[in-house]
Amino acid sequence: MSDNPLLALLGLEEHARKAANSTELGFVMVNDSRALVVYRQAALFIDGEGLKAVSGVAEIEAGAPFTLWLDRVLKRLGGEDVRQVGPGDIDGADGAEWSEWLPSHGLLLPLRGREGKRLGALLLARDEAWGNQEVALLTRAADFYGHAWTVLHRPSPVTEWKRKIRSVPRYRLKLAVGIVLAPLFPVHLSVLAPAEVVARDPAVIRSPMDGVLEKVYVRPNQRVSEGDRLFDLDRTTLTGKLEVAKKALSTAQAELDQATQQAFFDPKAKGALAVIRARIEERFAEAAQLEDLMARSQVTAPRAGVAVLDDPAEWQGRPVAVGEKVLAVASPNDVEVEAWLAPADVIELEKGGPVSLFLNADPLSPVSARLLYVTYEAIPQPDGNLGHRVRAELSEGESGPRLGLKGTARLDGHRVPLIYWLARRPLAVIRSFVGL
Image (cartoon, rainbow, N blue to C red; front, side, top):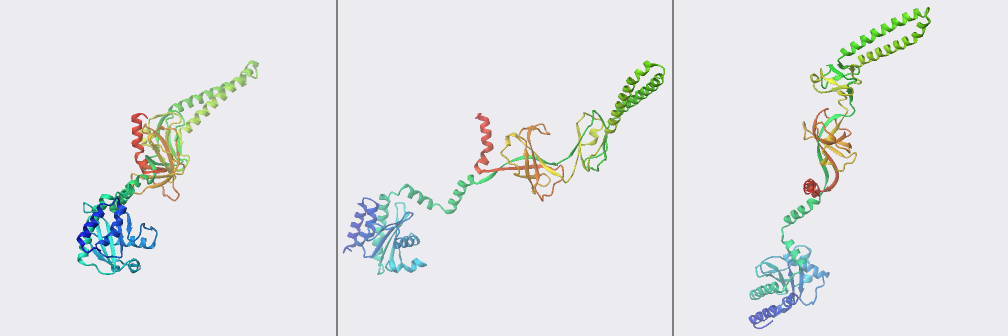
C-alpha cells in the first residue's frame, strides 16, 4: 500500500487503461488493487459469464470447490450499491462455509459500464473492517475499472447471446418458446363433412312393374308389421288384360271340347287336338302371369319396422318404372352415420378411425362412431354435387340417435404438426391457383 493514496489511485488507473486485454485487466483488479488498500483475497465476477479472476492465481480451476462456492456466493450477492458483506449476508450452507474460504469482512464493489449498466462485481476480503476512506478510494477505482472493462472486453457471440437471453423476463421466454413450439404440436388431421343418421340395413321397397302408383297406405315414420300393405299400383290395365285372357282361355277350352267330339268321326280333327291344347296352355300361362302381376301390384312390408318415405300425396298418381324406389322399411334402432366428403377434403382415413357426429339438434353432445369405409370414386350426392360416400358405425354402448337427424361429421386421420394442419388448405388453394 502506498503512502499517498491519491498517487496510488492515479497509478492504478493508468495500469487499468494500459491493459492489453480483459484478462490482463482482471489481473490488475484482483492483484494490483493492493496499492490502494490491504486485503487478503479478491475475486472478479462478470454477470452472465461467471468468475473471471481470483487473486494469487494465474488461472481459475473451474471444478475446484472454492471456485464453485465463490461463484454461487457472488451470484447471490447481487446489487447496485457498494457495501460491506460477510457471512451473515448469505443464508444456508454457503454462509456457514464463508469462514472456511474467505476472511470475515468483505467489500462488494459493483462494476458499471459507460451507460451505467451493471457489468459484474469485484469482491475484496480481509480480517479487519473497512474504513470510509478505503471504501471511497475503492469506489473510485471500481468506476474506472468498469469503463476499462467495457472497452477491452469483447464477449463471444454465444456469451452475448446468453446474456441477452438471460436479461429477458422468464415469462416472455416461455411465451416465445411456446409460440415457436406450438406449430410443431401434433394434432389429428381432420376434415368436416355434412352427415345424416341413416338406417344400417333398410328393406328398400321398389316398384315391381311399370305403372301408376294408385294409393299409399302408410305415413312417414309409421310403424308397420310384416305383411302390412304399403301401396297399390293402378290395376285397370291389368284387370282388362286378365278378363281378355280368361275369355280367350274359355274360347280355347270350347274349341278343345268341339274338336274332341269330332275326333271320334273325323281323323283330321284328331290332328288339331295338339294345336288346341298348346293354345289352351298358352292362354292359361298368360292368365296366370296377369294374376301374379295383379297380386304383386299390392305391395306389402317384408318385415317390421318404420316406413321411410316422402310425402305420400306426392306419390299418389305418379308413374313409376320397374325397380324405382318408393320407400324403405327400417329398424329405428339399427342406425349408422352417412356423410358426404368433398373431393377437395379427402385425406388418408383408416377403417375403424374415429368419427364424431355433431347433430344440429344437439351440437354440444357429439356422437362417437367408427369409420367403415370411404368410397374411392366420387358419386353424385342427393343435391347433385360430387362427393365420396362415408359410412360409420356407432361405437359400442353409444345410444343411437333418431333416424333422419342431420349434422356435421368430423373425420380424424393421422397426427400431423399443427402448422401443416393450418396450412394444408391455403397451400392447396395456392397450388391450384399457380398450377403447380
